[in-house]
Length: 65
Image (cartoon, rainbow, N blue to C red; front, side, top):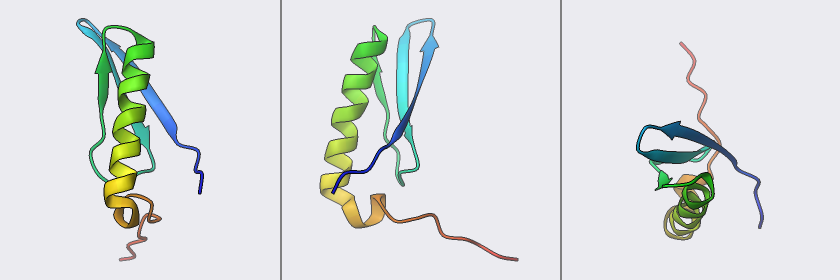
C-alpha cells in the first residue's frame, strides 16, 4: 500500500526541520540541508508506519459538539 504524504520543511537558524502532515503521532526529521531533513523524516515516517501502522494511517476522527 502506498500513500502520498505531504512534508513541510522549515528553515531555522541552525538547519532544517521537516515533518509530515496527515499522520498521527510525532514525526520530525532534521538536517543541515533541506535534503538531509527530508531524508531523515522519510526514514522516520517509514519506521513510524511499520511500527504503528494502524494508529498512524487512521483517518482523523471527527468530533462533533
